[in-house]
Amino acid sequence: MAQRESTFVNMVVVLFLVSAIAATALAFVYQATKEPILKSKLEKKKRAIKNVVNDFDNNPIEEMFKIPVEGGDSVECYPAKKDGKIVGYAVKTFSKKGFSGLITVMVGFDPDGHIHKTAVLEHHETPGLGDKMQRNKSNFSKQFDNMDVPDIPDKDNDGIIIEVKKDNGTVDAITAATITSRAFCDATERAYNAFKKIKK
Amino acid sequence: MNKLKIFTKGFFSENAVFVMLLGLCPTLGTTTSAINGLGMGLATTFVLVMSNIVVSLVKKQIPDKVRIPAFIVIIASFVTIVELTMQAYIPDLYDVLGLFIPLIVVNCLILGRAEAFASKNNIINSVLDGLGMGLGFSMALTMLGAVREILGSGSVFNIKIYEGDGALVFVLAPGAFIVLGYLIAFVNRLQKRKNI
Image 1 (spheres, chains in turn purple, orange):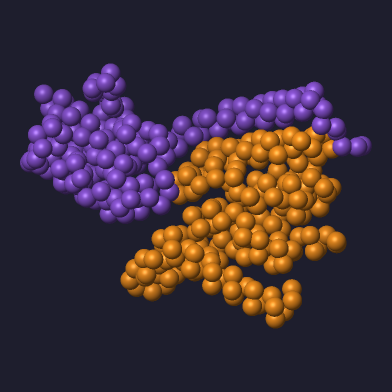
Image 2 (cartoon, one colour; image 1 turned 30 degrees about the vertical axis):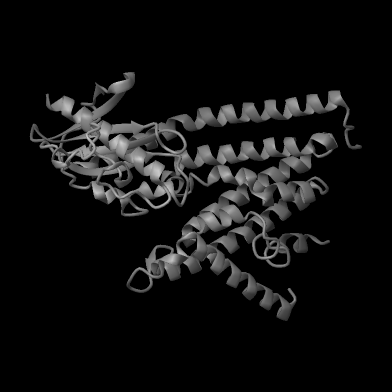
């Protein structure tokens, strides 16, 4: 069989067919992997909650409630309880200020407003630069461990407490990834604002 | 060219990394540890073999002038399949490699094999070529990753070899270039001597 000739009709038809077959195949794979992906994300969420708050014995995912934040969005809040007493809150917060796409972070609070720990759930930042906000890649996120947010002075009086040093804050930004660092601070700040609303 | 030669040329005489210097972006980016290099290499191998099969099957049907876009659609589909499958069944590896998987699409190695080999050869040879090239690529990435992990973090495949943190530079991008340079020199020396 000879090579198909490059006429206009041939090219259009072939490209259309190739794309259509590819799209159909992907639709099937997407359907098949949808469930397991959701499951593994839930698993990840559970692990993240466990990592960011004190020991608990309830099921925070079942007791999840939503708190509205500015801009018409809301964050998910997972209360952690031990023997019926609140030992902390894990707040699933986000930031749209990242370098590429949405960043979701789990921030754990002790009942008195200390940040216990943080964990990045999902992001699309540059590998090698922005992804250093992940706990296993650099010490950046460790600055937030045990951060006593209510005691941090708001140096430039702009109402935002958790900021990088470039913006008159207290957080050391990741080298060459200031935008990501800002987004991480933004997400944490949003979590803290939500936490304040729980306390009320 | 006999079948064995088609398979083995990917390891030595036409190794994608050491000889042709193709696909350097994922090579340098993912090889911070041996296991990352191996995972990336195997994911690339899968995409390479599958795209070689499909390209070799449809080569006669695709008009010459639109072959590149058609190949890219085929390759991108397989990459997406790998990404979704990995996300679903090996989430831990996906956490590490997830950001790099979409980069397989633009890996010159895969488009290069589709264009230079699969579109001119039959399906069996194309599979052998894809396997050889892919495994050669995996081998190179694993070697690079292992050396960087030993020098940079003091371990290999996450097994601690010596105490301490090692030289940080080998984990960072400059270390990737340095190690790759020495490995290329080493492989060239071997080839000159043995003529494999």
